[in-house]
Amino acid sequence: MDIVGLYLNPPENALVICVDEKPGIQALDRTQPLLPLRAKKPQSWSNEYVRHGTQTLIAALEIATGKVVAHIRNRRTSVNFLRFMNDVVRAYPGHDLHVVADNLNIHKNEAARRWLTRHSHVRFHYTPTHASWVNLIECFFSILSKQALAHSVQRSKSDLKDLLSRFLANYNATCGPFTWTKGPEHLQRIIETTKDYQIAHPRKPRRRRAKRPAHSIKN
Image 1 (cartoon, rainbow, N blue to C red):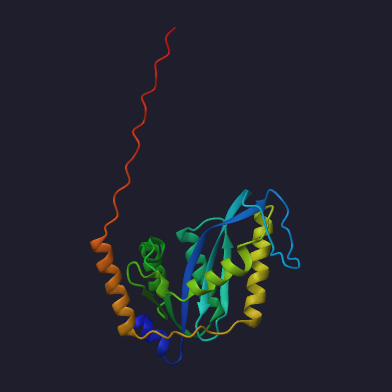
Image 2: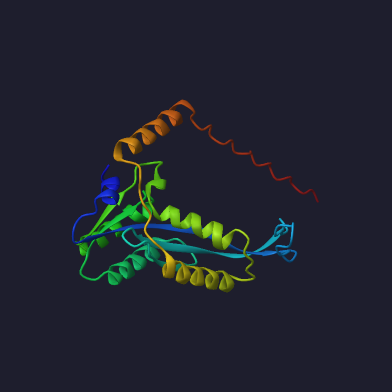
């Protein structure tokens, strides 16, 4: 698989970047204050919360250093994705870029193809279907969820945006590269096993509830 080849043997005079979006990050305010960690008692919090909107994080991970370039936006759209890619190109001037991305439509639509035509030094490498976890940016998203979002409290979208910005700055100050340890053969076996399981256990289509006919109102 050429993505694993990029991880294990990056091309000379080029950079490998892993790109994806984390949409629907919720600004959650707990209905009761968090109880801090105390002797013999762990930190605790209420399961009840109030939503204050969502944000989308569009991020690119440089595999050589582990550093992340990101945009915080209200929605995941094709326009926002391509604006982000313009900033990625500006962040690495004079470099050929190999971009790992999943098969989301905004990564492969006509607008994305036109953008690639205008940026001949950028090449997209798409992860196999049902294997978006091959994209190393997912490792960063997991760290973000566990270290910043799991027990945080935000009372507005502005608070959430500030939290994400501060986490990104702190992360880039101390980050290092991830090490890919699975060779192409191992990865191919995982993908084939996943496909076999999905064929043997197809998802049942969800039944749509029939709408009840509106009752006529008699005068």
